[in-house]
Length: 483
Image 1: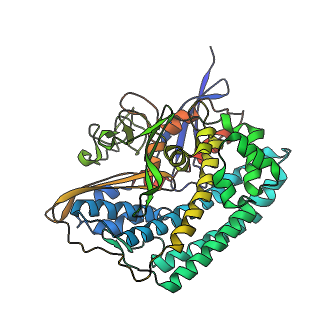
Image 2: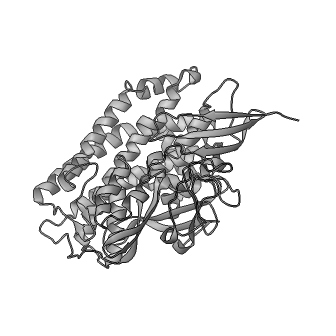
Image 3: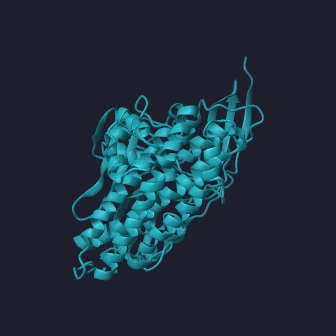
């Protein structure tokens, strides 16, 4: 009989927050994995008793990376509870602010979090290694320096439209507090033009329109070999050499809550992708399971959920993260999920047997970079200086609302209940809560736990490279997970 050994991998560097993964290894491969979010923060408990508008100040501080996403979700939850809809120009500006943050986040993940792993000495001798060392060595790589500058320049738009970043108060239930003027419009278009120049010169070495139009693996292969393709081409070389398309398969179910509502619908559709079809999201069937979390309580929809930590809870609990399920099933969220639900042909073609993998997740994120950058240019060109960007609102006394958005890492929901002007319940399901959830009441592993099963572990590895690639392909943000 083969012997099973246990390895605790972590902490993971270049991950926002604390993450620890327990691996049971048999015959050099992961047999079972358990993802632990070891730091509890308790924002849901902090919000109880506060006035509803306090959520606009407190929830953005859950995370300094996806702060705008938290602001958007809180504003939408309050807006739904009081029954207000922002005017279309306000929705457009909010979508622009949100998309800029997500685009900057994607650049951060690819250049600073994901690609530096391939510069490790363990890969010396691979045909692509020298190029990765030159481009992505931490703090020194030329791609890291140029991407950091491009990201910083892009975030200038936050100063113009949001006042500051992170933790803006410009996003409100009735719209946005800053109505852009003609000068803002010109400066935003110039900033986006500079961003396009970086993307088309270094990341893709091709026009954004070409990338967004790729419609399958054959088209991707032709595009890749027609000319040098910058850092995207370098990643494709790595993926082919290491077999990243066979690494980290997740559940063959993808969720998107719809991204960037502009007053004229969503840029990226909302729905559930499963078995080759998209359809409505049965949000009333969301439940958070607690059987393997250091929490007390029964499975419940967020409107009925509670956050009651129990640090003394014994096995089988192993994480502060709850286990959200949609109609009893795990779902994967993220940029690839958005593109799959949006029915983009390349995103669907990247799946293997209907499931994601490391290569697909990274390429899905890069595809979204191209499509989002193009949308930002269109939105900026249609900004309406002088138009109304804010609808009249009133204080929320009693009511409830859900704020549903797409952060860079995936689906984010805030569920708010207020009574007599005070918050009585506030529940949050963040993207990494979906992806890094522990097992549920049926013992079904969460998406990243499932994706890690079968990953190779070489003798002597303390945090196996394959495990790191799989984990980072999900782009975890653990501080959002344990809000």
